[in-house]
Length: 135
Image (cartoon, rainbow, N blue to C red; front, side, top):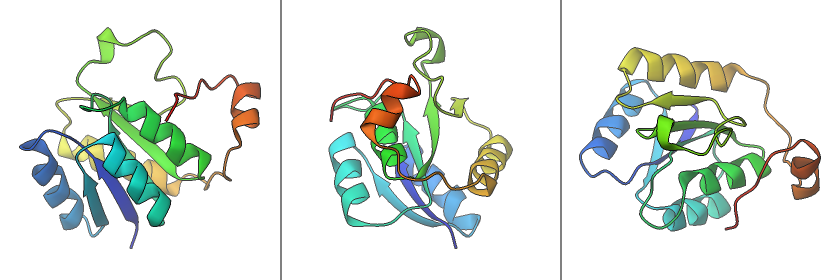
């Protein structure tokens, strides 16, 4: 069973996404902030980090960056796709809100089916042109 870290601050959307993922037979751990997500990333193994971009305490891309550094596959969701800095999502597969259930599950399956990435060192990220956000 794949282990997914769900990072979503919206108190209405988070339980809905959690229900959808649990119904898809995924093991889900949810966080409502970047700080909580980063603590969970440090403490538990995950197969995928599903991160909202707009979190109250930091960008969800910071969480996605740390997941990538740990070799965890990422999927980003955002309701502000057109308001982001050009190229800021280039390193990620992402979905725009509102997310359709079928699209979400297909993207998760695609990411989980992708070869696992080895943990990425910060120096490798710079060489690849991936801009890491400070934690």
